[in-house]
Length: 501
Image (cartoon, rainbow, N blue to C red; front, side, top):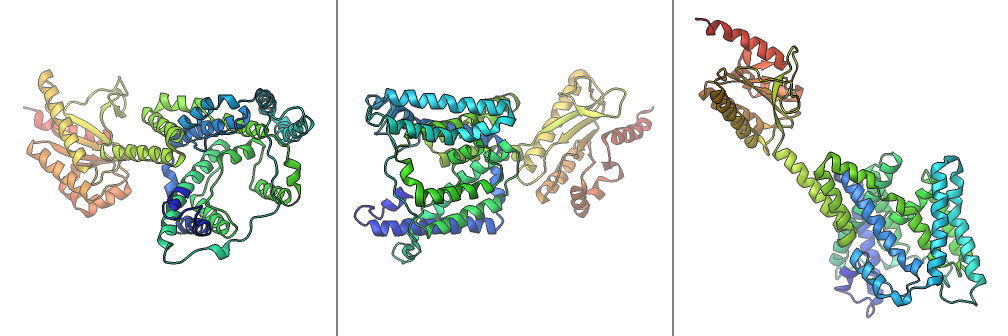
């Protein structure tokens, strides 16, 4: 948001107008997000696949962890960027600022926090140890820094924090025509980015804790939150990955935890801010590190590699995109790869050649079942996807290629002449007019080669469309069967009398 607004308005020379545009952009971001939810467009979160979320979670966890090096090492001049390379460069270039006192204390509290977390995971009845350790660590570290404040200045602490709440900013919403287009454009773009990140965070923790996320409600909640925030001096925000991780790590189960947290923050802002004057930055870094370090799921990534290489590639795109580029662009890259995968599945559907398992009426893939054998005179094929305009031409050419390859094999082996092409449509969930036209054309071209086309077990909606298109009538009584076994038995019996001398 800052970079987009600063291109037109200077935050230093015209700070009041800049603030007005920031609040107005936040308002439009929230309005856009809430509108998506009200229009029931929550299905877009389905494009965040499991592979995408695994990579996003790991990448975000690494980024958040690297950001904590500032507090753990005692660095003062740290980069404001989030990408991996600038952060590592900043850590290396500021070696002179590293504080051994900060490192020792930070690592000590980090070990304590990780130990309590491990104890709670091993013994669930002791969950309270992990839940209480962050607050106890804050209290103890604050007391330690207060006691040694005169002996060393190497450990940085929070310092003075102003008390009170943000002032109302509803009167600063700027709807003047001069900069209205800029505010709307900035709001929509930042709204999309924050919404994508927020939903990704929600889906991540939903998969970890085995609950469902309603995309429409998420969009409306984030949208109304930003609309309300624009009236209370807030800029565009979304679900925080690090704070959500801390919340989960503390044992929070329901949204009531947010009410408790908000109440605690309110009391703290109004009355308790001076107590945090000597709270060291290192303890905050240690708490966040403890929360996010367990979110890197190596086993899930390895499983993706073993099961589906393309999903693993999607996972890596999400991971390195978030780590090297940015969180929104990393997610966008991963979603783009997922969409390409969907398009490949749709436009290049899987087709299989079936054979009979001896002694049964079962027909399965010749590649998957070694014991399956071809049935003389038949080429039995199965399509494992809907037939639509995007793949109808490909399927037609693929089936004709199967036919040519089968005839070539028959000629080389002097087998029985190919007479019938059986198309198992059990897995064809839908068909459109282009698909129906492709079936018509396929039947016509096969007839020219003296080959019969037989359809097997089209599902209800497909059968209804085939019937309305009159293709069932053109196939005849012997062109449609319920099972492959019935088709083979019936057609074979009709051929036998003709084959007798």
